[in-house]
Image (cartoon, rainbow, N blue to C red; front, side, top):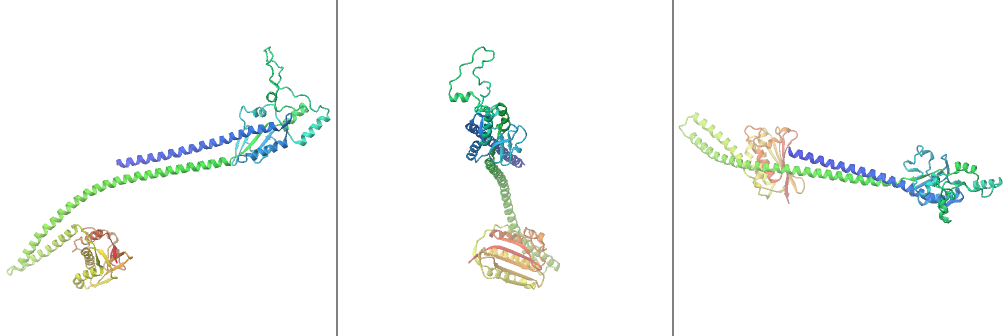
Length: 510
């Protein structure tokens, strides 16, 4: 009981360890998925920074950017990032596309208003994926937005402005708060610090990057900014690499979980083997103790049987002497003969018991099987003739390895049981045959009543007999000798009636 309780605890612990490993691997897989998604979003932010550089590099006339040149640059950017980047779109304030490059751009599937990420099966769409603090943040989220015009549209608008009589360069753009060096700090009463040196770098830092061109009126600029101004942009990233990462990590986690399961099952089987070995050792110890006790009882019983047989022989001899006296009455002689008969029965049972209890020491030797069969047939010839039976021997001559005396006793007991089982004019067969070049079988067949299926195993137990005159030890002795040789014996039905006692696994010697 204690061992079973301990085994249940061990199995529970092993199952718990496996569950912990599976949960751990699942959590790690989810962490890897989240990190991979975050890495893809960060990669989109890096591309957005590159996009800002592209926008600034394409500016030629104030805040106007050439659409053709911009789309060529965006296409080149997609080509360089073809493993991850599928498409880029620049949108106006109304969410309409003013410039694009690549594929997979779905403005209808961007999700709810204000959403910055939209994950699909093959792509992820990101709106303005910029880091706070980057140069592009001010450009996109500020008030000075670049205007995307095609070359033809730009020519038409520039020509129209000149026809209206405006100067080719127009008035200067409106000042932007913080961009006028003549402003004083509110309430300070002090002039601002002197302006920085006039060089290209400081001019780029101090003035708005995408202001109104000088040749464009304020009204026209506001109109174009609503229709052609860049208000936001969309980046479409491919998730193929992301899914490959997910699948590889999932396979890895699955293999780890499978190895953990195999380890747990192996540990469970190992513990089961240990427990079974422990149980078997305990049983072997108990069986050894019981075997020793049985051997002692067997020796004591054999000694008792041997000592009992001697007084029985004396009783039998004295009874025979009384029966031979001439002056003994007939009644006394009849009782004396009954004493002799009963003494003979008890003596036969004692002899069978002593024979069964004797240790079997097999002395193997090469012997001719047909000669042993013929000797047994001659030994039982009187009993066979007395019941008018027919005994047949079949089989090819062969040599086997066995103890000759023990094999003769086995065949004698089997044939004698068959003689007792069949009626007058019955038929008995002794069949020997080779199964292959190394094994042979012996069968003793009869046409008697046979053995019921439920008794075919019990007939080999000691003192089990269906014959009133039998001792119940004949077949037990047969099985003992057969097992001592390493053979097997079984009782089978004989068609159409009778029984077959088959001895198999006899070793054939060439």
